[in-house]
Image (cartoon, rainbow, N blue to C red; front, side, top):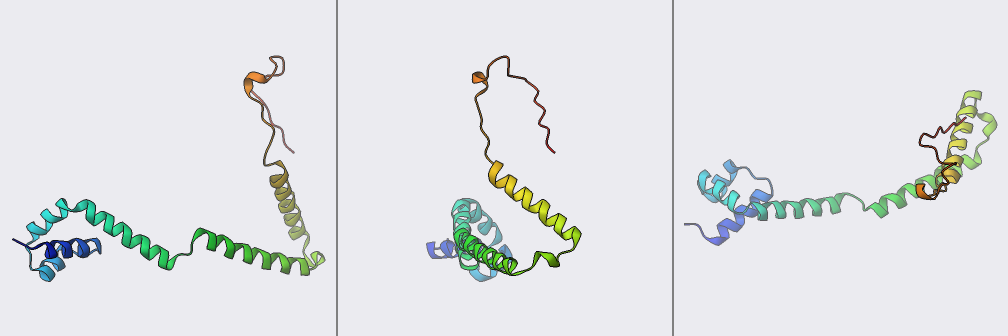
Length: 136
């Protein structure tokens, strides 16, 4: 019979990704016993693994707020540089591309939200099942 410390050590090592072969050597326990422990303590192993992965993520990855702030700072720098540049230096195709991009941004900014009315409030003579939305 194995003591509780050995079982707890198994749970920690298994959650850390150690293989059965290494666990057999490390803990001096047979593979069938390790497999039985793995089944018995599977939720504890999975939870510990999740906690360890979350801690690694916090250590190496910036929070969403930090990433957005970093991107916002980069955008501010790019826009400041763009403000210093002369549009006249752009080629004709670049100007067309810029104009199209600016129109799209204006449309997205001003037209992102539209007015909506519940269907049951539309007068019968104005309601059509199929609507054609023609855009230029």
